[in-house]
Image (cartoon, rainbow, N blue to C red; front, side, top):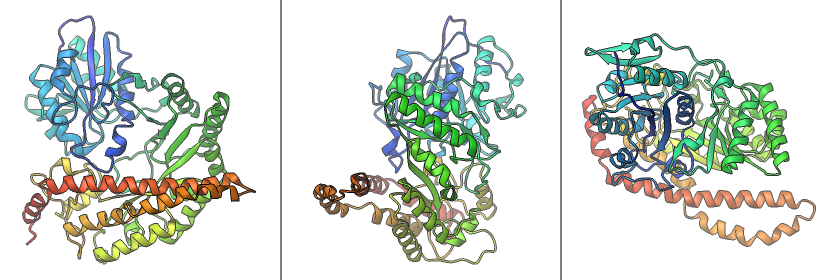
Length: 525
């Protein structure tokens, strides 16, 4: 299979990060950050001679972005302003795939070559994508594949010579031999956020580790972890600070601290860099609860400016933790959370409501009892902020395979990919739960945590500010206590507004009528 571009001095590759299908709990951060993966691929593609590269994040168009009336970018106007020769699509979020197909259809009708990549594209989804105006799919990491593809498009070379891709030829899906994972991460070009058009980044994503060995049933990230050096991540941070004025960073590694010795060195380097520039930076990391047992690591993290921890608690129910391949027990989780707080970290707890049991497990719990478990645990753990999602049978995960085997996944003819954002029930839940109960019970936990009633406590806490002077022996300690309360009340108030907006938009949609149709199609009466 060959695609040949007409002769030109300079070609343009446009990489598009598609807009979310609807407002959800992630929307608050969407216009403050971007996808690191798309920026990494673009930074690699820029090294190909004769090519210019740009990244368009449809969720972050805060600097003069040509907006479409239906959401996202006005691609017709964009193509008039700067005609792209090849358009790549970031398919890391399954819920955005319908938007990918819509944009691909537009560009394909104008003779543009379309390429897609990301976690969504696995054996199950490849045929659909190739029949939806996607010319070529990159399977796995894209930094090396995109360079070879751009050269092939320019020269008219046969795509069969490129490993790790899928395309269609003569009505048949062709998959070339798998491309091995990139081992020398230090050799990759540095992510260049200047390639983003129209975006304003307040929280910069950076990373050092790829892969995760925890093998969670619901997660699509698999494989033995591979590590870049600590020096590379510090170089990413320093470039962003010195060229773009960045101060806040999200380290996107699935589990911070996997490579312990190098992680300790990383923390030391970050501490030294901040002392050198005389500026304090803020870092958010994703970390396992059991890392609270490593006091040396916790001290190093605090010294490095790591303040916010995103932790996958997943569930306070022991049976659900076992179903997810989690080794901790709820009582252990409480103690470890207290340790993180004692070291001064803010804890963002991530939970999955009503996780489905494995075959043969006799466990039944009503929606009301589940809500009580969650509320009790969150209160005891004194978690600063929470995120409650529903289980998602993502393509390529063991969870999807299990639920499909049990004939429990609702047909996509009724509930398409756009609902795969962890906000909607997508499969028949364990009895005695119904899908509607699963939906509203999860919202009930969030609604109890994020509520306008905290406005009074927020104002009362502001009035208590002068009493910091009473902490004569430790003003710093008094400030930390006061600020933590102020911050948490503020987020609970703002979170209530986000939930209200999400609920309003959901009620306006047709989800529940589609859900009824889906239940009937899998045989529920």
